[in-house]
Length: 173
Image (cartoon, rainbow, N blue to C red):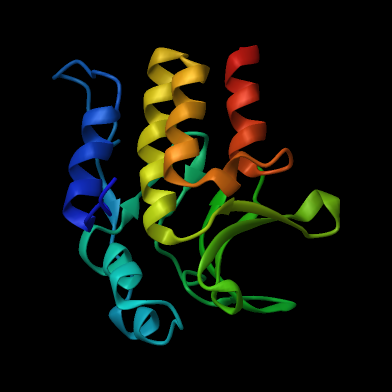
């Protein structure tokens, strides 16, 4: 599998969305570009920074993730000096890039004493997983999602990882 480029990510993510009637505008294809000044300060590879600067991240993505660019975007999470906020989930947990851990994508569960929850090994792998999860939401094919995630980022299949928990939740609905 070749590394997905930021423009491929945006295109693939939009294609993975469910069909929307033309007379309804939900803005599911809206992407947020991050501040070049703040991105330049991140200690992550340039090809990872490109996702924040070129394609950005979807304003909203399944499962209830929000990447709206606000005053807290790319600021350090209080108490976690190497974790920079890129978004949040529907529970208000921060989604961060942990630059001390090579730019892994993690969330911090504020209801569980800020427990660190692994999401993906890098921003490009996170982008790939967002596309795969969007497809899972439409198809409900958990086996296909698990196979895809095993190819994308096998560590993201660990028992306590974000995507393992969320894919199980989708299948319960």
